[in-house]
Image (cartoon, rainbow, N blue to C red):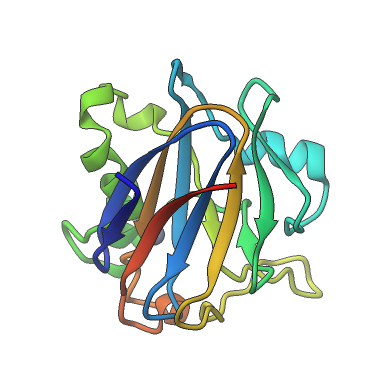
Length: 196
Ligand SMILES: [Zn+2]
């Protein structure tokens, strides 16, 4: 399988071999992709935004940066990022957030999207890993608080990652439609593989 289309507010999953390029395509634009990855030979080793913050020590990744696992090993190299917005500070949206902050029961979320497409891996809900939120602006304001905004991604914009180990990759079209993040209309993403 060389590509997976992800409908708006859903998730998709693809196996990426070491050395391959993974393209995360913003099909319709203005859409955040919550991105997760697991070492295929040890799914407990996940892409880790908290370790990334420790290593990178800035708010956003730049092309050429290495993405790290929870064991501080390289999982990906960032090759291209047309928007330059790739939040790795905030967790995935979850049903609890929609219930507590927006009084909506059973709203789709990136966390339950991840759970749906990784059910065979049997990861307890509480232990699901945190995401890299590609195409997501999370500006730090002068008073130190996090701001919000709408994803600046244009139709066809793509993040390109080079896999440095064999991984299971998951992308979630963020279902957040209560704030402007996804232009109030979660839309399609696509995961595409190519050989470097
Ligand atoms: Zn989300």
